[in-house]
Length: 86
Image 1: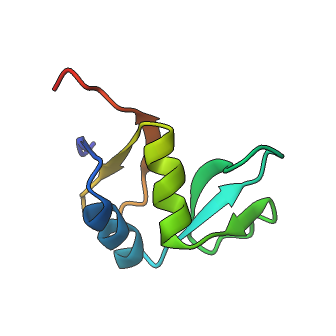
Image 2: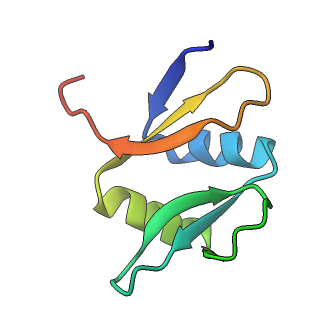
């Protein structure tokens, strides 16, 4: 299994997502923002498309990092809490 990499770099995240035909999305929770997701076009009616600016505002406001696999076309990704110790 390939190792996962963590980043907070907006451009690196955007490139990874777009290279896999993904789009920024959120699950609306009724509160400001929402739960971030990447929409790869799989049928998920609960996802609402959002613009990259809003995506990264929510990402930064919640001190998130993007965990992902660089391996080939893997779509494995997860939003995790930032580790300020590194």
